[in-house]
Structure formats: structure tokens, C-alpha cells
Figure 1 (cartoon, rainbow, N blue to C red):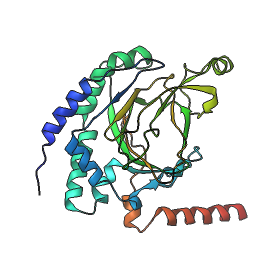
Figure 2 (cartoon, rainbow, N blue to C red):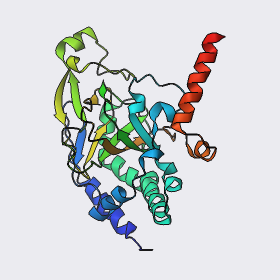
Figure 3 (cartoon, rainbow, N blue to C red):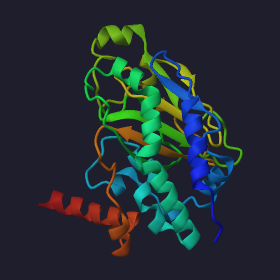
Length: 286
């Protein structure tokens, strides 16, 4: 099996992170292209899990989600990727890549590069140095998926999206940066000052930037109550919106539970949906 230069790749990624230039209007965000070394990005594409490995967000979660298009976003948690690989080479790759993302070295560099900005907008963060953890999801957004303007959970420090588009995918599928319009701010005085879990209408916001959806591009933002962003509705059924969502957080938590035990027990998203529907019918009858 070919040996790959993981240490060299890590050094190259660290240099790229240190070269970040932040934009500060309407909040702090950045766009890097390319992000990963070319050979490493190519391997991500080669070993990307097959579609039957992905579960809808509500399917993988044990609790109901409030976002109506939740199951149009298909996810794999990064900790599951080695076991979902069908080849030994794939298992080894995902084990190494998972460690690259999950171990603290790259997160430490991101925090060092952005800590002053984080503390300037997050008065709730008083730790010195900032405590941080990282996690990641592989995601396929399918036709009909959209996210209205929203801010991420307060526990997030940095939200990062590494784009892996299919060949010839349009560039207008990237993340949108929004700011609330004047009338919406008047009607909602807490907007921009408090974290909330709401998804708003795009008509109440101004689109100030859309990240180009290009191969090996990384869009990132510093999370604060002004950091409204979203995804325009996917209308084209020829292309999915494929990316890795990488978050650096204040808490060491997993975004979703592992599905490995369910898969080993013969459970699939489809069989789980049928079971839930049957349970709902029984609950109504009782």
C-alpha cells in the first residue's frame, strides 16, 4: 500500500490557515482556495462514501428536528467513515483524515489565527486560552434543500465548509452571507445581539456575499450573533451540494450518534422510517 506524506500535507495546510485574510462586514468570514494539498483533495474525492452510507439528518438523529428539509441533507459523521469504507486503503485513508481533522493541531492554528476576532465579538468567552474541540460531518445536500438566514449554535466558535463539487456543478451553490435589513432590525431589536435557533425569510435580509462553490475551496466564519448565513434552494436535480462541515466548538460533543451499531443490526434509513410511521399510527390509535 502506498505511503502518503501526511506530515507534509499537515504542514502545507497549517501554512494555508496562517494565510487567511478575514472580511469583517457584516461579520468575520473568509474564503480560501485551494485549501487542501491537491493529492489529498483528490483522495477525498476517490474515497468519498457511497450514497447508501448517508442518512438524512432526522434519520440519523434520535430526536425530531425542527428543520422541515432536514432529511434532504444526507450526512455521515467523520468517526464512522473508516468502518463504512469497503477497502482497506479506504479505511486507512479515512482513519488518517479523521485524525487530521479531530486532533487539536489544525484547530489550534485556526484558533490562534482568529482568537482576537473571536474575543472581540464573543464577550461570553472568558477562557484564556480559549478551550476548543473539533468535529466534522460529510454532507450531501439534495434537490429541494435550503437553509434560510440563520446563525449557528452558541457552542460553535468557527464553522468551516470544505466544498467537494461534482464535475460541472454550478458555482452558485455556495454559502450565502446575509445581514438583516433595516426594517427587520427595527421590528426585531434582538437580531444581531442574541443567539437564536431560528431560520428566517431571505426577504428580511440582504445578500452581501455568496462563496463560489468550487473544488477544494474552504468557506469559514467566526460564529457570533451577527453571523447570518444560509443556502439557496437546490433546484437542479443533476447536482448535489457535497461538502465537509467542520466545526470548532467550545464543547466536546458529537453532532449526531454513530450509525454503525444500527447498520450491523440490519437497520437502514428506510426500515427506520417504516418503524417510525408504524409507531406514529399506533400512538394515534391509542
